[in-house]
Length: 297
Image 1 (tube, one colour):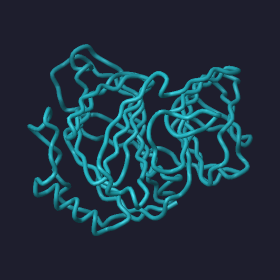
Image 2: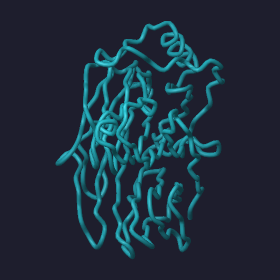
Image 3: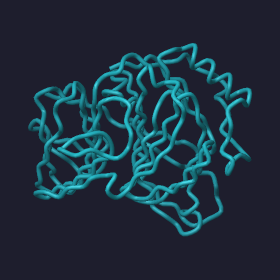
């Protein structure tokens, strides 16, 4: 059975840049180690000098960000010195660990015009990895195994599933894949993990004899193992093993509220290094911090 249906909530991140926030949700904070799930756009950007859509330098701790695009291009720069554009069907995997800062800018769109559409997920780190050294990796091609079967083109983004293993280094058991489904096709949803979900990014699907439109995440019970597309659809399947309670404040994730407070203090005081190639501005700490919210599977 389906345990829960979560509808995206539209959020304006500034300058008209909208995302559909899915996780965390009040009644379901995590799915396995996945603690954050944003549907980026789709947004059409006309050529201009307007930088209002850019995500200025900001910090993270205690998590990995997993950025994946269906369309468009975003430029990543971070405090480790990496400068890496991400394009369709590619992955930028950034592990914050003890602390990292980065920016995400739409430079290609400002120069040429662009349609940007994708997903950014956060994966919480196990307790013994929360303070690991930060790292960044970019993945495309053979790092992201693909398959084509019976009207379904699959792209493995992270972890292991469908008998395949993705190239990114993960820190706990998980899977994450993009299924590009033609109308009438049916796909398997990986089993073998305690918590699983699917997200309908575009189109409409049938699961457990019911129809679900785009913008919905279905948290799956143990008996669900198939999804059918009513029309051409992009479906994300994800899950993994629970890693325990986590707290979130702004861009920080930790098993300790005290660690969140320290991270906030460090950012406010300017103790976190900005990207060398993008250090002229940054996003300030929110003026009115809210109490850290508990997140657990």
